[in-house]
Image (tube, rainbow, N blue to C red):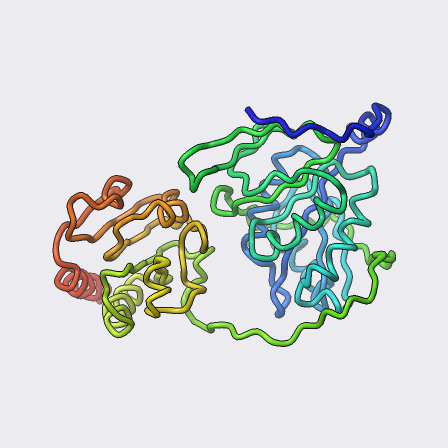
Length: 345
């Protein structure tokens, strides 16, 4: 077990106060339309396991409407307060804007835990908050044993580490795929509160310019129940689209890829799955022409059912697959797609 020691200057009295007033601050991301980002619902479920009352924080122009959605659509029994700020400067979660506010809030001794999803936003914010508060964060947890003991994968998932946090505050990021989202329902007892406290930030010359995002009607990889992923064996973008798109359409699935496929230009890098891409855990994961490099396995091996289509009987992906189809993918995938399409008629 690894232990993160607390700060030497932390007094016993302060630790006692924190244990008595223990509360969790959970950062909840929203879309520009005011919907709750799915990974934040998983993070809220993890926060409930800590046993503390939860204060959710929502920022940006849609924060107030999103807070109402949160209260009326999910059942989070520990949620007792929702802090919101509709200020435009928080719209894109620029860390230079959001971090000072988080630091100011977490200086309050009420909070014993800070929880954020291990998303792009969470990974951007947590290290900055931890550095300014002088705490060691516990990143990418997959299990909570108790309020101060967490489990997380290391070395691309080849080892599992148990971390005991002995600091007076725990700063935690949650791997969304490892926790079920909070169930549908309502949390009407939670109080929505506008915050207007100064975040202590200086006027940094940081501005949002633009974002070029791939728009798709397909399920987002982080929430898709079925994913069809392709590797370098698909040869080129034309073949990638020709084989995977019809298969994904037949299954109503999201489409993913290995880093090798992305680097070869088969698809956009937003579809990359693996250690340096997205971590997913769908009900069904179909790996087409993927050998199973350790970096890719780190991003998908928690899938409930894994089907691998590969011509190499010694491919590492077959060692983690529940079902393996050994053969020429250029023959197997069209046949499988036809069978699925016929079954839907």
